[in-house]
Length: 113
Length: 111
Image (tube, rainbow over all chains, first blue to last red):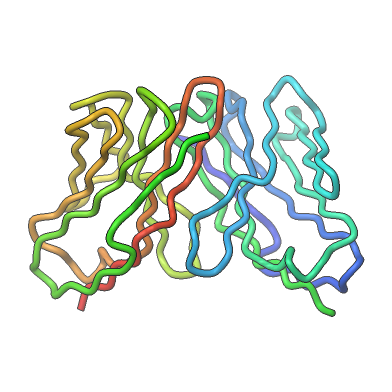
């Protein structure tokens, strides 16, 4: 089955700097890659997603890039703010998300004031 | 957009006791529904998913079971809880052409 590796497990950046989180996946048939933000004690919230027919997607300060050849995708957050502090999860699916998602183990992002 | 409700929000149960967690969805019809478990400081593990009433697919062998008695209701159960069943249980919903959205979760502690 699909395996998703996520790095780093913890990332500390200064407020205003950029943060990058990277994920690799094993199944070349995967075609859908969402990113979720989870605050303590809450359910994950979708922040951005990308499908395999697109190489990059941007939404204000957040962007995701996908390299299908290398089977990796990355989350980029620019101009980080204190409210960006949370745990971020990447995920992959071979069915566009319909049959469930395989998640990475998460990255704890800490924004230093 | 859909709204997912889960209850209870927190639960403390003794080992060997039964379990019933409920998830209901508003704002969509005939969704796929999912149960995930998140152990402390870990990622999410898919436990069950359902594409329709009475249709359940199990992803991992365990002492848990799931049922879908109505289109927008998904239930997670156990006859006898184990210590290892402790965790944060999340219900999720997917509609064709959309993505997966998660509910607020249930924190289960088995003592």
